Image 1 (cartoon, helix red, strand yellow):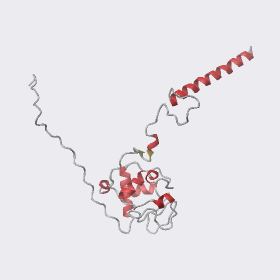
Image 2 (cartoon, rainbow, N blue to C red; image 1 turned 135 degrees about the vertical axis):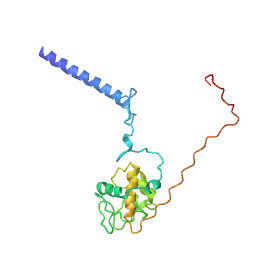
Image 3 (cartoon, one colour; image 1 turned 120 degrees about the vertical axis):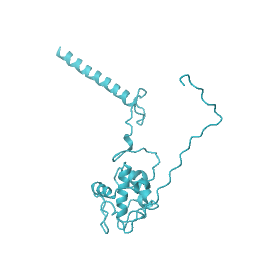
Image 4 (tube, rainbow, N blue to C red; image 1 turned 90 degrees about the horizontal axis):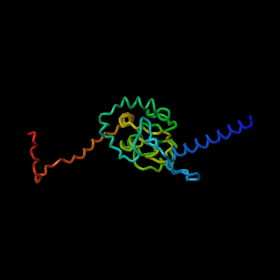
Length: 209
C-alpha cells in the first residue's frame, strides 16, 4: 500500500512538472514554439525598452540626435562639475597637468582630436576614430559610448538626460586653456503655415445660428 502511494506521488509530481514546463514555454515563446526550434525564436512577450536602457533613463535606438548647442547656451557648468565629481572621477581627471587614470585626463578635451591625449593607451577603435571632440561629438559619445564608437573600452552605459550631458560638456569646456566658443544655435526649421482654400464653399449656417 505504501509503495502504491509513493509511486502515485512520483507520477503526480512528474505530471505537474510536464504541465508547468508546457505552460512556461507557451507564455515565453508563444503557442508556435516546438522542441528543437531555433534558440532565437521570438518571445511571447517583450519588456519594452529593455535593450535601450542607459544611465538616467531610456533612449530610442534610431532617433536622430538633436543638436546640443541650444542647451549649451544656458547650461549649468557647476551642475556639470557636480555630475563629473559623482560619476566620472572613478576613471577620469580634468585638471590641468593631471595624470591619466583608467581613462585619459580630460583637460583640453573639448576640440581635441579623438584618441590623442598624451600617454594614454587608447583602444584600437578610438585610435581609428576620426575628427575632433566638438560639442556635437561629445554629446553623441556621452549618450551612448559603444554606439558612437563601437569597440571603445570605455565601460559606461551613457547619459540619457540631455540636460545632464549639456551641463557636463559646459563644465569640460571650462577645463581648457582656451575654452572654445559655443556656436550660435541653429535656426529652427520654419513650420508650414495653414492656407485658406479660396475655392472651398463656405459652411452652411446651422439651425442654431
